[in-house]
Image (cartoon, rainbow, N blue to C red; front, side):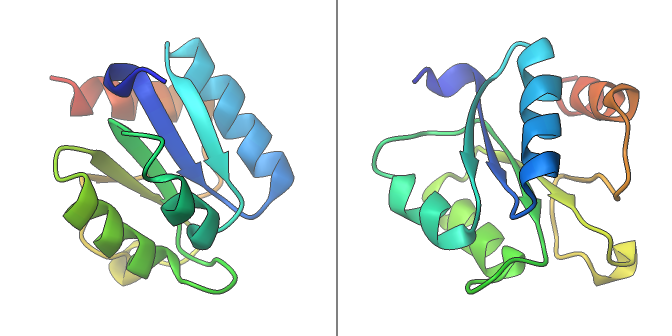
Amino acid sequence: MSPSLLALTVEDNAEQTELLRRMLEREGYEVFSAPDAETAIAAFPEIQPSLAIVDLRLPGVTGSECIDILRSRFPSCRIIVSSVLDEDEYPRADASLPKPFTGAMLHDLLAELTQ
């Protein structure tokens, strides 16, 4: 997978995962989807994401813990937190995408991150 345009999604809701995949592919990204943090972390030897969209409410390892590991392993990876939680509960990230969101919201956010 090309590290320059690989997006990692960590989301336990299958419908949300597919929605993110379609939106990101329209933006030119290849997408690696993980249903939980453990799957994402196990894939790290095979992938080098330039972007990660991480849900906070995950089974097992939390989204916040996954973000910490992502930051240590891929310091140049842009991290977007996507959650139904209040934004004041989000960990430090490059951007936030509160749920529910639209394709236009994701497009605008990606444009801001790449400026």
